Length: 71
Image (cartoon, rainbow, N blue to C red; front, side):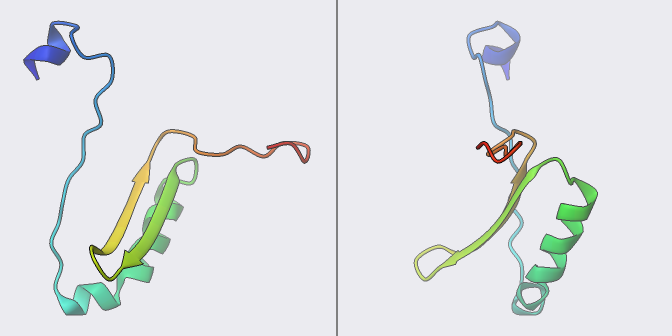
């Protein structure tokens, strides 16, 4: 935090982690639907791997823009 205040860090990415139980895991598609509706301009993602489990998140930064058939 001090490095940000002092201008030593140009960009910081803050995140929160929440460990969820199996019942909440079954609702992950619902959570994904909620965040995409709450933040339609953000890049939202959901992915799963055997090694790391389920990841659900979003970023306010633009990931990809398509305009007039141009990416």
